[in-house]
Amino acid sequence: MSANKFNLSDPIQFLALGFGSGLAPKAPGTFGTIAAIPLLLLCASLTVTQYAMLVVVMSLIGIYLCGYAAKAAGVHDHPAIVWDEIVGLFITMFMLPLTWQTIFVGFVLFRLFDIVKPWPISWLDKHCHGGFGIMIDDIVAGFAALACMHLIF
Image 1 (cartoon, rainbow, N blue to C red):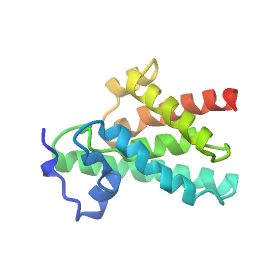
Image 2 (cartoon, rainbow, N blue to C red):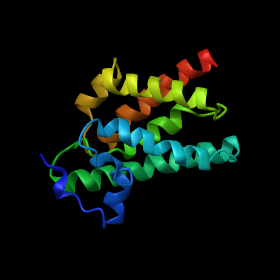
Image 3 (cartoon, rainbow, N blue to C red):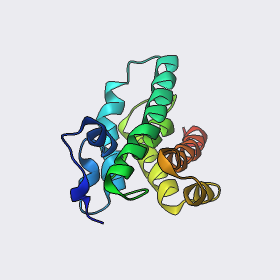
Image 4 (cartoon, rainbow, N blue to C red):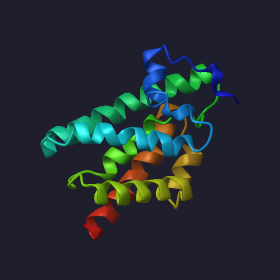
Protein backbone atom coordinates (compact mmCIF):
# COMPACT_ATOMS: atom_id res chain seq x y z
CA MET A 1 0.00 0.00 0.00
CA SER A 2 1.50 3.28 -1.05
CA ALA A 3 1.80 6.25 1.26
CA ASN A 4 0.29 8.55 -1.38
CA LYS A 5 -3.15 8.13 0.22
CA PHE A 6 -2.02 10.40 3.04
CA ASN A 7 -2.53 14.14 3.00
CA LEU A 8 0.14 16.10 4.89
CA SER A 9 -1.96 19.27 4.64
CA ASP A 10 -4.45 17.56 6.97
CA PRO A 11 -3.12 18.46 10.45
CA ILE A 12 -4.34 15.17 11.95
CA GLN A 13 -2.53 13.09 9.34
CA PHE A 14 0.52 15.38 9.58
CA LEU A 15 0.81 14.55 13.29
CA ALA A 16 0.00 10.85 12.83
CA LEU A 17 2.77 10.65 10.21
CA GLY A 18 5.26 12.15 12.65
CA PHE A 19 5.43 15.51 10.84
CA GLY A 20 6.07 13.61 7.61
CA SER A 21 8.90 11.45 8.99
CA GLY A 22 6.78 8.32 8.59
CA LEU A 23 6.86 8.78 4.82
CA ALA A 24 10.54 7.77 4.72
CA PRO A 25 10.84 5.01 2.09
CA LYS A 26 12.84 2.73 4.41
CA ALA A 27 12.45 2.22 8.18
CA PRO A 28 9.63 4.73 8.75
CA GLY A 29 9.29 3.67 12.40
CA THR A 30 12.94 4.49 12.98
CA PHE A 31 12.53 7.88 11.30
CA GLY A 32 9.41 8.51 13.37
CA THR A 33 11.38 7.74 16.52
CA ILE A 34 14.13 10.11 15.37
CA ALA A 35 11.48 12.80 14.91
CA ALA A 36 10.65 12.46 18.62
CA ILE A 37 14.15 13.50 19.73
CA PRO A 38 13.83 17.27 19.10
CA LEU A 39 10.44 17.18 20.84
CA LEU A 40 12.02 15.41 23.82
CA LEU A 41 14.67 18.10 24.03
CA LEU A 42 12.00 20.80 23.94
CA CYS A 43 10.37 19.12 26.96
CA ALA A 44 13.57 18.92 29.01
CA SER A 45 12.49 21.71 31.36
CA LEU A 46 9.13 20.11 32.25
CA THR A 47 8.59 18.81 35.76
CA VAL A 48 8.00 15.08 36.21
CA THR A 49 4.27 15.73 36.65
CA GLN A 50 4.06 17.94 33.56
CA TYR A 51 5.99 15.39 31.50
CA ALA A 52 3.76 12.54 32.71
CA MET A 53 0.62 14.54 31.90
CA LEU A 54 2.01 15.36 28.46
CA VAL A 55 2.68 11.67 27.75
CA VAL A 56 -0.85 10.71 28.85
CA VAL A 57 -2.34 13.41 26.60
CA MET A 58 -0.09 12.40 23.68
CA SER A 59 -1.16 8.78 24.16
CA LEU A 60 -4.87 9.55 24.28
CA ILE A 61 -4.69 11.93 21.33
CA GLY A 62 -2.60 9.31 19.52
CA ILE A 63 -5.48 6.83 19.64
CA TYR A 64 -7.56 9.30 17.64
CA LEU A 65 -4.73 10.46 15.34
CA CYS A 66 -3.62 6.94 14.43
CA GLY A 67 -7.16 5.66 13.98
CA TYR A 68 -8.03 8.61 11.75
CA ALA A 69 -4.91 8.22 9.60
CA ALA A 70 -5.40 4.45 9.29
CA LYS A 71 -8.99 4.98 8.15
CA ALA A 72 -7.87 7.63 5.65
CA ALA A 73 -5.26 5.24 4.22
CA GLY A 74 -7.57 2.23 4.31
CA VAL A 75 -4.90 0.17 6.13
CA HIS A 76 -5.02 -0.78 9.83
CA ASP A 77 -1.46 0.00 10.91
CA HIS A 78 0.24 1.55 7.90
CA PRO A 79 4.01 1.83 8.50
CA ALA A 80 3.87 5.58 7.78
CA ILE A 81 1.77 6.13 10.92
CA VAL A 82 4.48 6.84 13.49
CA TRP A 83 2.85 8.92 16.24
CA ASP A 84 2.96 5.71 18.30
CA GLU A 85 6.75 5.62 17.96
CA ILE A 86 6.99 9.22 19.14
CA VAL A 87 4.93 8.41 22.23
CA GLY A 88 6.92 5.20 22.78
CA LEU A 89 10.20 7.10 22.96
CA PHE A 90 8.66 9.68 25.29
CA ILE A 91 7.66 6.84 27.62
CA THR A 92 11.12 5.27 27.33
CA MET A 93 12.76 8.49 28.50
CA PHE A 94 10.49 9.15 31.51
CA MET A 95 12.41 10.42 34.56
CA LEU A 96 15.78 10.12 32.86
CA PRO A 97 18.30 12.88 32.18
CA LEU A 98 18.32 13.81 28.52
CA THR A 99 21.94 13.32 27.52
CA TRP A 100 23.17 11.99 24.19
CA GLN A 101 24.00 8.71 25.96
CA THR A 102 20.54 8.19 27.49
CA ILE A 103 18.78 9.25 24.29
CA PHE A 104 20.92 6.87 22.22
CA VAL A 105 20.39 3.89 24.56
CA GLY A 106 16.69 4.70 24.93
CA PHE A 107 16.31 4.96 21.17
CA VAL A 108 18.01 1.59 20.61
CA LEU A 109 16.06 -0.16 23.38
CA PHE A 110 12.71 1.21 22.25
CA ARG A 111 13.34 0.29 18.61
CA LEU A 112 14.45 -3.20 19.71
CA PHE A 113 11.25 -3.82 21.70
CA ASP A 114 9.13 -2.27 18.94
CA ILE A 115 10.69 -4.39 16.17
CA VAL A 116 11.17 -7.72 18.00
CA LYS A 117 7.82 -7.44 19.84
CA PRO A 118 8.36 -9.93 22.68
CA TRP A 119 5.24 -11.09 24.54
CA PRO A 120 2.95 -9.33 25.50
CA ILE A 121 3.76 -6.71 22.85
CA SER A 122 3.28 -9.25 20.04
CA TRP A 123 -0.07 -10.36 21.49
CA LEU A 124 -1.30 -6.76 21.72
CA ASP A 125 -0.11 -6.06 18.18
CA LYS A 126 -2.14 -9.00 16.84
CA HIS A 127 -5.29 -8.68 18.97
CA CYS A 128 -5.93 -4.95 19.41
CA HIS A 129 -7.26 -2.89 16.55
CA GLY A 130 -8.09 0.65 15.56
CA GLY A 131 -6.23 3.64 16.96
CA PHE A 132 -5.94 1.90 20.33
CA GLY A 133 -4.36 -1.13 18.68
CA ILE A 134 -1.86 1.02 16.81
CA MET A 135 -0.84 2.80 20.02
CA ILE A 136 -0.88 0.08 22.67
CA ASP A 137 1.98 -2.11 21.43
CA ASP A 138 4.30 0.91 21.25
CA ILE A 139 3.16 2.12 24.67
CA VAL A 140 4.04 -1.27 26.17
CA ALA A 141 7.32 -1.35 24.20
CA GLY A 142 8.06 2.08 25.68
CA PHE A 143 7.44 0.81 29.21
CA ALA A 144 9.63 -2.25 28.58
CA ALA A 145 12.43 0.00 27.33
CA LEU A 146 11.83 2.36 30.28
CA ALA A 147 12.31 -0.51 32.74
CA CYS A 148 15.59 -1.40 31.06
CA MET A 149 16.68 2.24 31.06
CA HIS A 150 16.11 2.54 34.80
CA LEU A 151 18.11 -0.64 35.38
CA ILE A 152 20.96 0.72 33.25
CA PHE A 153 20.95 4.33 34.45
